[in-house]
Length: 270
Image 1 (cartoon, rainbow, N blue to C red):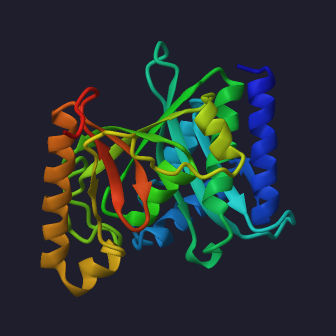
Image 2 (image 1 turned 45 degrees about the vertical axis):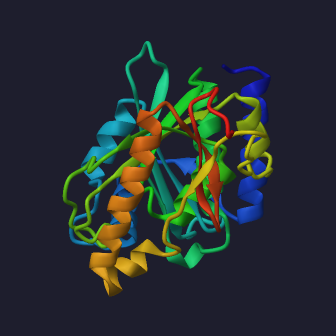
């Protein structure tokens, strides 16, 4: 899709990049790939064992997958402050699996992650790819809000302990439950979200809707009270899995109330 949809997507990215005061571009130079691996290692709290090596990033780039980074400014000495990597699904599916994306803590409040994702979206639409998917930890409220409200992605599947035990500084030996989201890149809702219009969850009239709450800061809770953190994992897993298994859907995320869950279509309150 190299027509007006892709052109509009690039314009939305450029606006986001300008607002965030970053430059986002693909990486190919081996030195930059090594720097990207180091940045990911620092973000994930494992500088000695980054979640992706420079060699793997090199291979993915050679295979024409997506390997890009955000830089704080346009100068030659601009610091790399974010990395985003994705690879292709089966050719018939024409989908991009966005495997990892992270931004350094120094960029908090600059919306660099938003600019990175919009660059990835435009890159995909340029290549005729209209669907992107990725996973995130359902307990991390800020990520749920970013993915569902800021980007307009929707929940496709709940994946219990998807990666198994991970020893990085983010997961803290908790089970790695993940939500798989789909991002329909050319849809009206995603176009609106890319223009800065937040997707807010709305309870349809007469629907027997419910809310699944999550802790405000699960990452801090894993440090201060690991047992309570594991309790949240079990609670949210049971509620979301049960709802999805019954044919329900997750209709969005609210910072105060959590996930909005709608029952199977046709189920209404008495």
